Length: 262
Figure 1 (cartoon, rainbow, N blue to C red):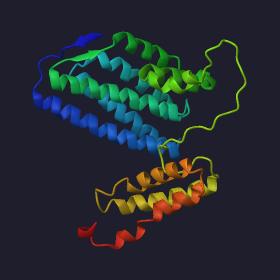
Figure 2 (cartoon, rainbow, N blue to C red):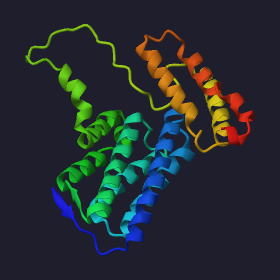
Figure 3 (cartoon, rainbow, N blue to C red):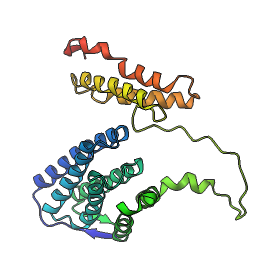
Figure 4 (spheres, rainbow, N blue to C red):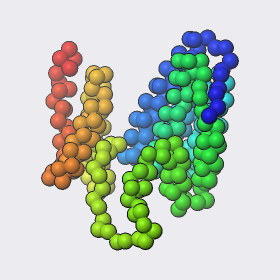
């Protein structure tokens, strides 16, 4: 591990920095959720690129040098994305969020104790892993992105490690059902394009309604994700598309209530 001690900076500068990073992190989370639903939306791709670019620029202004090269390579990857040279995937989303987690931890440590511990060797390994992802090797992207993600969070590889037999002799086993997990959006993946558009219509409608009260923002997504998760655990007794629509329109009538009651 290495230690980074910044130049003398006004506390207000650091406070402003972490506030902007938090805002951009939240914006990026929302953008990534939208990209799960509309992975080819170039406006969303550009917005994600701008968020990472802005964070990198802010860190450059205060000379937080150890973390900047890593962000630069994530930005380069998102530059490929916004130019249509690589495709968006959920694993790319994991890479972006885990990288931004590291950035937040780095800055928060500097603010809290005046320094930050970081693994320079790990950063170099990450940079090398991301550099291998190019427009010319599309077929390898999931594997390469997965390798980069595991560098940031090795625990994500535990299920695969546990599944490997102790003996070198491979034995055939009946396929095991996947563990239910909370999805990134409230829109089911395994549905027709027509049904997806219908659900997105109701979702967009509900998002407009949610803006009436700041405490409501994101409520439809949260309810839909939780409902789909519980439904999955129960063996999917309810059709996923019907459940998603029900969740998004459930509170529609609340839009006609006085704001003071919301």
